[in-house]
Length: 79
Image (cartoon, rainbow, N blue to C red; front, side, top):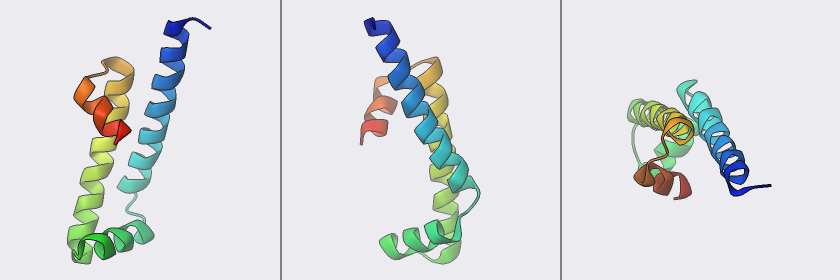
């Protein structure tokens, strides 16, 4: 495999992971809302809003990784 092929395999893998988690977050999984509430001490409504924002951001990261990988977003994906 050449380096460009390896790069694309990694980009597709990262995009798939972030797209999948983003879609689940946008579905408002009750367990995830509860987990965020427990982690942050936020109310259920605030936790649901945070989950939606994280889901949207994850989908944005997935799109950017495929179209134009920007270092700060790649750093977020690594974090």
